[in-house]
Image (cartoon, rainbow, N blue to C red; front, side, top):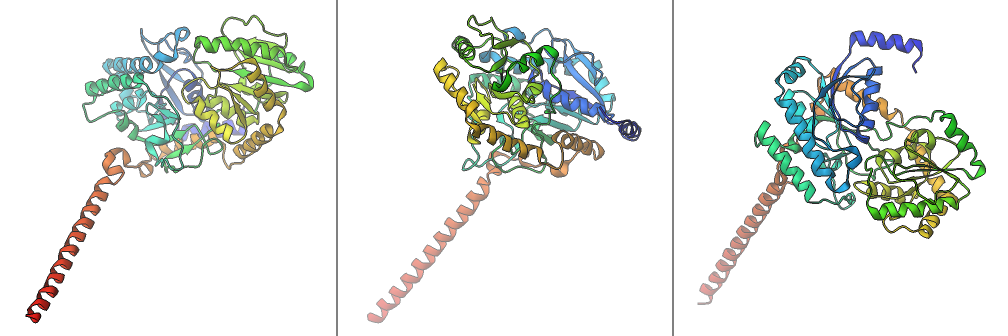
Length: 481
């Protein structure tokens, strides 16, 4: 909510400068992130258009914050059937099929061309938005944490392995398949010179969903804008039924558990171990709110409340909350940092082990292998985080660092989007490394040239010394004779 004078100011601002932003989002938690930016841009009187698929899980056709353009898509992945093994290949193929339909819809492309958008805002994890921006000839801004190739820093910033840890993300033939699909798409619509990497290289601004309370220190670039925790906010009041349950926790406090929203069907060994978690919860004096969408565990205790949906930010900000049990998604970890709640991590897939290892190093989290979990192991880990005060103290210290900055992350992100629109891009901040080959980027050609010069010089010096020595020896021989 904004005071009346601020609404008046925003109204004047809209008349003077109201930008037009075309958003090509991704579904799931990626949409949750970019939706925060959309709502803030709307609040600041910018016009936002969202390009969405007809079978989107979360992206609604009607919204007070944006105008939507819906593209019919009969393919896609059913949310209820989503499986880890099929995720990468199917999501890439689905995204590029949708982008192909957009490109081949001449009326739609004509309307997008004539709308005179100032920029395309997209998440580059599956590449579609970058290709759309290039096709329309529009400037590109990325809302990014991961790309198709891994952690986003590795695409744009120097990443010396001597002190920048390589994310432990398992790559499979699914990624190879996705790359083949993408190469076929690029050849069809752009020719052989354009690919995913060159499309990313068009971006002037990289809005990075992380910061250095979470990241290890590392080199960066002038067009990387750090906005870690931009989606976090002060906790709101809980619904009456949840608040009543939380208050029954007394001095023992509350445990919040969520393993994310992406996968409805977890592997059987993990599902089986959830029963061990339920038994452990029943032995605790704390109250537990657990986001759980599968069959109700038979040994669930009276102290555990199962819910389909979880007001996670508001629960983490509640003074009764003692521990957050999470799979290690970036959003959840940043909310835990924001509210100063220590973590018990149960990483499952993708970046989750890497995310949680960063928290473990900072002394704010304990990790348990969910595939090997048993009730004794889980209880010991949970009690350590509950009763060892160092976890809470370290997380509160991290939270203080996160809050102690001159500008809120969301304000910083929107400032740079508006800067981008005011100045019609920011090419002065963009590195040229995307246009360089691997040999040029690492100066291999320069090193080889210098090495050849050194070798040639050594060879010439050797020849000169040999010649001089020969002359000296030859002269001595003549004198001796």
